[in-house]
Length: 177
Image (cartoon, rainbow, N blue to C red; front, side, top):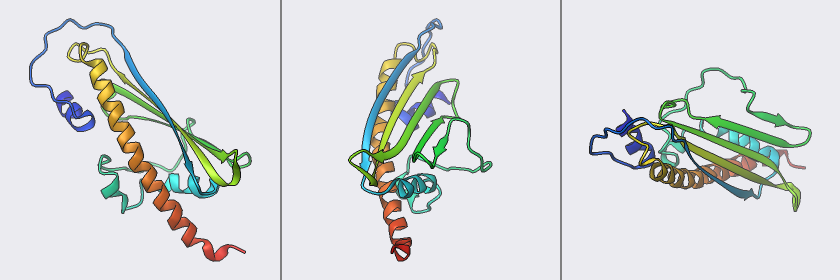
């Protein structure tokens, strides 16, 4: 199972057996990036909620096998403040938690240079390999590879967001004064 996880999510293969004592090593790889959407905050945040439900995204977001909606409620880690136009989303991996923890924080706010027309997206991701004997010596390499994959996939996510924003713009253009 671990080998399959590393192959799918991090592009790493393990071909030999490890017999190392379990050590308490916790490595963390983190990165942050910003992106400016040249769309209003309302459109970008709407696109964010639609990103995984859009059937056209299966091709672009091929690293996501499936997204199931178990119920329609916001976790306390997601905060939408429509009055101040700020949305903060925190997501964590559900699967394979005994091997790896991934936490992604995304914040959408109006861009200070164009408060009504642009949105700034700040994204922070941390990847933590759990202390396992099989990964202790490789944790840093695995985390680095996972971080690289997350960076690549975040580019795909931005492409999807841009496409949905343009779709929303066209869909509601008839409502403009």
